[in-house]
Length: 88
Image (cartoon, rainbow, N blue to C red; front, side, top):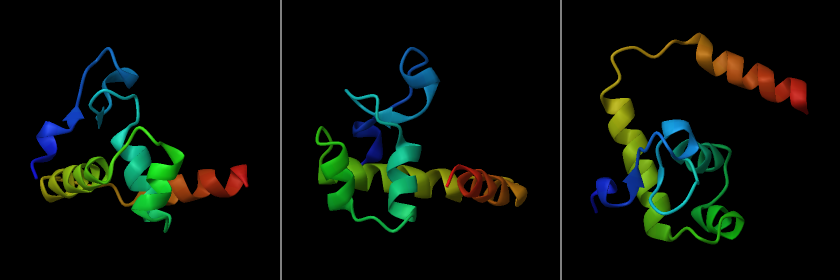
């Protein structure tokens, strides 16, 4: 599967964030939901317009992006976790 067949980056849709084609579901939300421990089935239950292939494409996209990252700031994870702690 080529993730490029299922993902679009369009400045007119969701501020140019990568989304599943034909939807406004951002890749970051799909990958984040999986990272929180939810299953692909749970993702599809939450966003029924998605398919298993869409979830797989999102994960492949994330892997490709991570594999090409020159620098990932370590403090970013702490900031995200701190924000989540403040909300809960």
